[in-house]
Length: 478
Ligand SMILES: [Zn+2]
Image 1: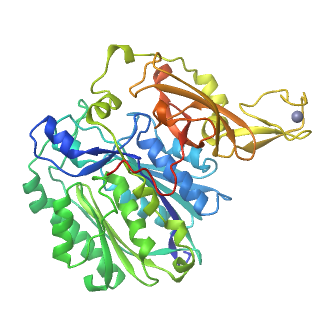
Image 2: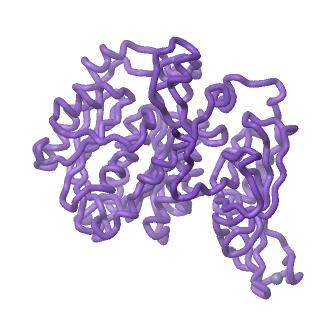
Image 3: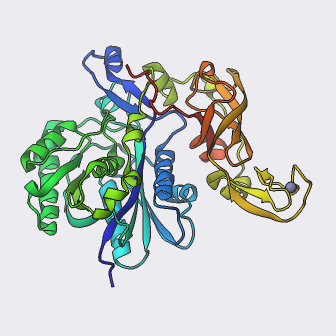
């Protein structure tokens, strides 16, 4: 028997701290742009952005204590062959006896992933599902897409019962074979298309049809909806669809750019953060047709808004990244000195998976010392047995560091640091999103999941230290 109330239990966003000033990009080409878009740091990809949001969403949901399905949606998966959902699951703690799904290729995967998760819960296959989306889509320098796309991730935990903060009460979908933005398997970048033709003949009509179907499924009229999320890769379509439906369109607090599969989840969370209990939010995604859901904010939301609070994540997008440094971050302006082939071992990666993805270490049963990486003999008391596994804290203070420009990096310098973690343990790794002059001993740092390198022919992910911004955020945005 299907549980009676199915929907979102918690959610989080991972928005890069960096943004591109589009006026600067415009000056490099035709001088015609303004505004801004979120850009990932060089060590963030679709998977790290999805995984970071997934981990935060799981923590806001109170952790994982039962088999949880993992669904990843992205149009920028780092592998052509093999799934990436398991990497997200490894970071979020949802690996184990549960299914995973990957919705790739089209941006409709964001809404489709939410529907797939709710369906799996409704069918009784799983009690909980983690839905994560991440995007870092490659765009050709000078192209419209370079100015349109935004990078980021979002995730929600789906379940049933009284803890549901937003119930899925309506659904509608359209599938249509049309020419829409595409990248061929032989190319790197999305190609230009006739946007006006696409918008008028395919994109907007599909989105409106899917939205109306979802509203009818919920027994609602457009006037009953508090706000609509219209995620279309085209800001003009969002306005058009909102106007034709007669529903106010939800926008992020700062412009982030079109975020593909991640955008509907991120903006749905933003809308829920402010929603009154009983209010309805319409969420419409696109992709060779469109798919829409209606969410109803429940009474439980009033007491648990922090579980969907993404405003701070969105406002953290506050550091401008110079255009030339952005090009180097993307490998589009590479120097020969940056070509480096770090060693990586498949055997080591397999053996240390729990340490690499979950920050799993050992705690000594005799003296409580924490070992990371795991070792056979306690560094403090010499014990050789009686260890338990533990998960390291992800915040701490910088104990010592060194900065150098000799090691190849697309950034300004490579900074290595040791953090004294809260809850004990020291952690040695690279620092990220920090210039040497911004780093000092004792500063607050946090561990963030990043792409280290592509050694061994595969992606090597690990944790880096990032300076913690104070609550007011960086003031560089001005
Ligand atoms: Zn010990």
